[in-house]
Figure (cartoon, rainbow, N blue to C red):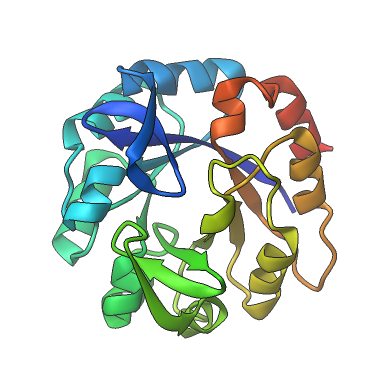
Amino acid sequence: MTFDLYPAIDLKSGECVRLIRGEMDRATSFNPDPGDQAARFKAMGFDRLHVVDLDGAFAGDSANGKAVRRILAATDVPVQLGGGIRTRAQINAWLEAGLSRVILGTAALRDPDLVKAAARELPGHVVVGIDAKDGNVAVEGWAETSDMKAVELAKIFEGCGVAGLVVTDISRDVMKTGVNVAFTTEMAEAVSIPVIASGGVASVSDITALKNAGGKRAISGTILGRALYDGDIDPAAAIAAAKA
């Protein structure tokens, strides 16, 4: 089984930023041109991208459409997008615009039937984003925490054609404290859907730990964020570790 790496481009006001634990007032801008950042990641050797419309996640509607289109125009690698995608019309429009996959988070909790129907009718193109705080699902750009357990939400989408689960431990996100391997492994073992780890990846050793995590089902990949931007993760070393 391959282990995929997804460099993250988080969009706020049209720029490539990173937040601290999802707090919009704690944003650091890394590149004012998301298209340029996408091209840089491809030049580093990465073969896919993870994009989040942060403004859209809070607003409940796409807010950085122009920036996303610049990313699509700047590179030919598969791009998955999350943040503010809540309707079937939005799903269709983004796939028609050239996205490889759409990520549904708040919609997965609020309207699971929408997600199931889209996954069945658009096989390989619908991913569920599950952001967890102390094991419970957080939605609306992490502004709200529900009573639903992350594992239980994942099980709802078993067998309907969802292409993957992006699983984020909010407490680790951007903190570079190390990824929560135990939580991610628990999620991977709960369902047959491929699980992508997110939040806290601080070094190449975290990539290796996720790739080699024990259990009946392997973790399928991880998203790389702040540590990649800060230079704590060397792109070539990361890619080598993923392929090892």
